[in-house]
Length: 419
Image (cartoon, rainbow, N blue to C red; front, side, top):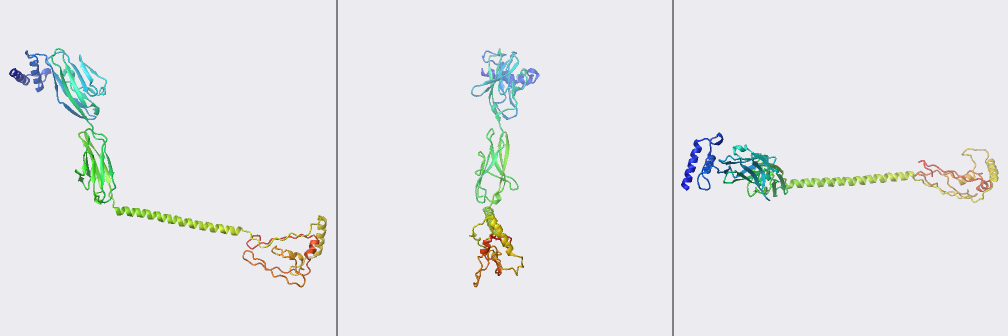
């Protein structure tokens, strides 16, 4: 039985090389296997013309997200009946049908693939490869193709695994630590997506090109450890995240600073703040002194000084208006004619009211020495001593009997204030 089968396979291969294939094209190695399968039936009773076989181009298909994916499948059969073809995606929780062909009519099922899936070739060519446009990560899985022919005794299935690769997203670069001379820092790089998980590579950009290796660099985690920093290690560091689908970059600028520079900057800032506070303090003191001095000058200019004692209230009783008027007329007649200032006779009125308006009391009696009273000073300037009353002036008692009223005449200082 084994020798007979080997002979049949050799005859089919020979026929495939010399005779044209079905559909007007030259048969290939796949057609040779197909002819051999069709010449030998599974029952072992002889040659059958109704033998079906499904061929799979590859068991694994890789595609990049957003690109097309082709799942290569074709079948061979001597039957002239129309096949019944189904494509299914085997994913959890249960497999579901994508599309089917029955009686030459293609039906696309309601799935996420409906607007992006179809056959690559016409069904009549028996090439039933599946085409998926704009692949997505969730399209990954095991695809199953089933072909059934009415008068065939064999039912065959083809399986293909699809893996959709996702390029890395633009990574994020970060600096961890204080970049000063002698310190240690860590540069990190991470991408939020990518299938398979991206690997990371750090390097320093020109003019000082430098590539890093483990243990300083962890390609899986995307970290780079820099120890014992120096000023020469300043520069631009670039991280590249890459996988089979593509790559993306990010960069970070490392500026190593010396500790002395930072101390000088901190001292300058503190010194400036201290100087500013001192200036503000003395400015406030100066402004307060000027304001206080101005207020004291204004108070001195507005102050009214009293240099004399107010006159006493007269002790004589008030007379009726008619009597006062008659005695006032008598006083006017006694006064007589006006004389010059130097030759005026002394009077009791002058003894009562001085030039400054102060009350000086009654004139001294005959034979008594008048008191030596000095007039007070006004605004720092001594006043002139008033002249003694002239002889022959009327005494206060006569003026009081005549009904005269004492009047206080205010004096005016040189500064213009009343005293």
